[in-house]
Amino acid sequence: MPSGSAEPIDPGVDIGHVHLNVSDIDRSLDFYCGVLGFELTGRSGNEAAFISAGGYHHHIGLNTWTSAGGKPPAPGTTGLFHLAIRYPTRRALADALSRLSEAGTPLTGASDHGVSEALYLDDPDANGVELYWDRPREQWPRSPDGGIAMFTEPLDLRDLLAELEAEPA
Image 1: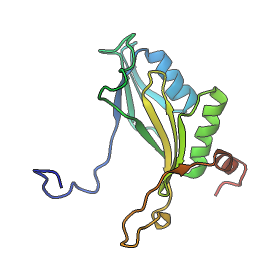
Image 2 (image 1 turned 90 degrees about the horizontal axis):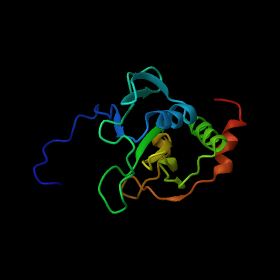
Image 3 (image 1 turned 90 degrees about the vertical axis):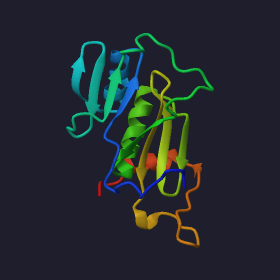
């Protein structure tokens, strides 16, 4: 356990939002709203925009306060590895894959982790984005001692897209 750690954090804590430095607000909105389907909840000119799913004040903040016209960080530098967006169902993740395909947005990876299935891609500013859904906890793979036994295997994208052909649950 890391030095100075006390009791575990309250299990009700979650991540409320992520704020990204971007080079162009409109280009980022075209991706996050136009392709992924988030809703614009607020905007401050070309300096900031706030987007959400389901009417929350914002899940993602986009700003150009220090990054207007900027370039992505160089490889080998610290910073955000990826932003993970959790979908409520496998069907919703299939819809996201369909949207990406229709927009011509390439994936950088697609994995089955046992506990989840994930799509990986880059946004227009080369920020890594993971789109995923969690399997129900009772389906998570377990080690003999009861721990979570995550793995990484290729995700069958055709099988994922077949969710859109099936009757909704």
